[in-house]
Length: 508
Ligand SMILES: [Zn+2]
Image (cartoon, rainbow, N blue to C red; front, side):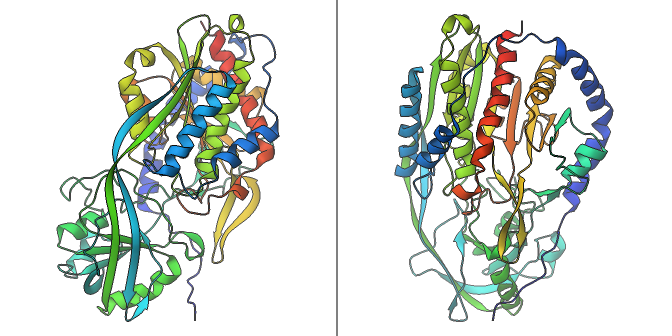
């Protein structure tokens, strides 16, 4: 008999703290926004039409890239994707197409199992956690809530398997864009961003954010590391905000190997497991697999222009599952720009373009960092970085049955650097070819660098950035499949990007 709990918003303290920070910055954002509006019409722009690939070509690119069940870094599936992108770059006519190797440990789970009271609980291994001895580890469960210090004070987790809830924060996007105007520009030709528009940020697991290598380094609110510090042998994490009892969550994808095994549990299964943990039921947790030395590769190519100043256009090719939206859609947009601009004669291209499909977004964004680090001269010549991710995804909402499409496109944002001409270029392109449900926001609105694959380039080189990214609910889940892409939206999106590039080709 399946149990259900009512679908509800579990929005959180952290979201409101972020909102307070944003409030403080509003006057500056409004000033920049005002200045950009005045500057936008005066910006120079490259003359002439830029041809775009037809919709069928964009669709076939995404379908071809997303044929394997995943494109995880360093795996044969990941390497197939790298070779595939390199082949497309060569066909399109890019020069010097290269695959820069980056060595990584490749973590692979062969078997994950959780048995409680003689019954298997559906679960999915938390990436980069420790393997158990063969036969698994057998210990009592203990319930630790969301892992606050008060939760841990009440129980002894030493020698046990800790069971916890992991909520996702919810961003009141409509409120931020429409009421607070915490953005440079809103593009919403169909009037589909309302005050109540909001989205779950599933990559922000508030009590298991990732990036720590030890309990000392982890925040006090990190349930995984606090359980480790107190001697837990394993951890079970309930995805209480992930729809439809899904347990396939690929995160935290920091690439950091963690000292005890852990499993993701779906929200419905979590209700039973919570009760069993409160009763101290005995469980056997098995996580078997291997860690092998491997290689992932940044794929990139050059379209020389009249000068060696660079317009850098990037996305990442890896994905935890099918990854049609993340980032089949992003790679297709990079290919679309490469295709379009390679059809413009060199004498009409004032600047050189460099196209990168980088590796290991799901391994601590090592590809983006590695590219910027190993090509400092190129980064110095880069006038603008345009990063394209998850564009053309469909919006969904959570229900007890799973994800339900709303008929709208998923909301996207353009993280935009504060230079007046960069903001103005975005305002101008979004006005000329307005994409659906998009807002341009300061690149450092949520964090010092964009919360996107652009972060590695910006952190390493300080390059000015326009990072266009969508955040539909199903990213990081196996439900990021081909049917989530609105193929009809891809060419209009490419046209807006082309307009941006036309401006950055002509800027002095
Ligand atoms: Zn992405």
